[in-house]
Image 1 (tube, rainbow, N blue to C red):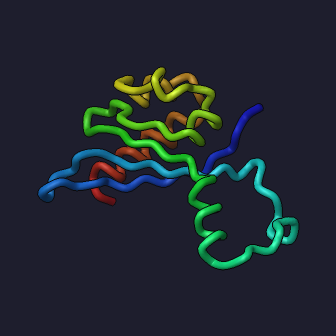
Image 2 (image 1 turned 90 degrees about the vertical axis):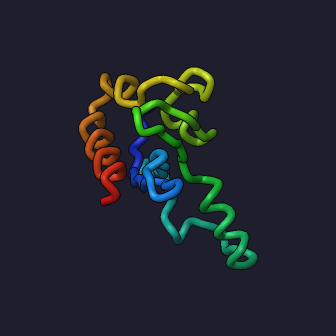
Length: 112
């Protein structure tokens, strides 16, 4: 099954220099409507639940995957160990979203 993911990315900096990009995605293809969600006990549990459902990954300045979270594994079908050190854009090249990922990473590395 294809997963529809809404992606965003931001550069992380060390001593003022871009050290990599942190990518965050949210699966939008399988989200229940807000009305279907059970009421939350408090705001903290709602926040923890939202964070746990995010797809997260990190890419070095040369485009190599340095981290690949559990939700990224589920959505992509690639295991963390399978992707570490590989070029993210080469992995995405066969996917129709490769242009979107290329643009997102480019903007993040530029600090936009």
